[in-house]
Length: 165
Image (cartoon, rainbow, N blue to C red; front, side, top):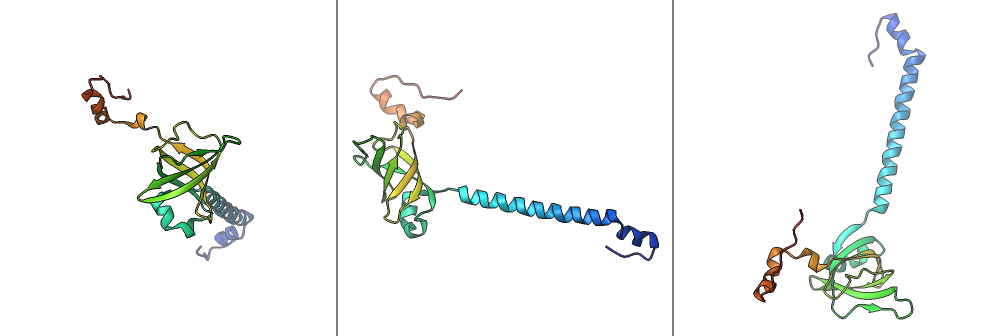
């Protein structure tokens, strides 16, 4: 702020209103910085990165203990359900030539079957086993395109493609 030689201007610079305005601006800036910091740290702590199985296996040491989402297909014949409580499941997902063993405790979706596309969310253990807290499995029949129905038509079955209206 430029200083003026006029006595009225000097008086305004020293007035309580000028001081209150400066204090208000300083407090507003400090509050804004604090809020931005809280938002940034809160988002950083809840962010979960999405990887493929091959990416996880390449970065296994760096990703151990980090919250992740990993996508892959369930290897046929690897789904094992605990006889004790029917909530503990182990299975293996694969993608790009890499495999990842998964341990999950909870109610699994009915669509978690052999060859299902699955997304598991959790943390990779130091032993290389993925400890899932959530499991999502896609149902292949819901995602078939019009061309996937060709095999039915060739067999003489009339099937209309599902379309959204």
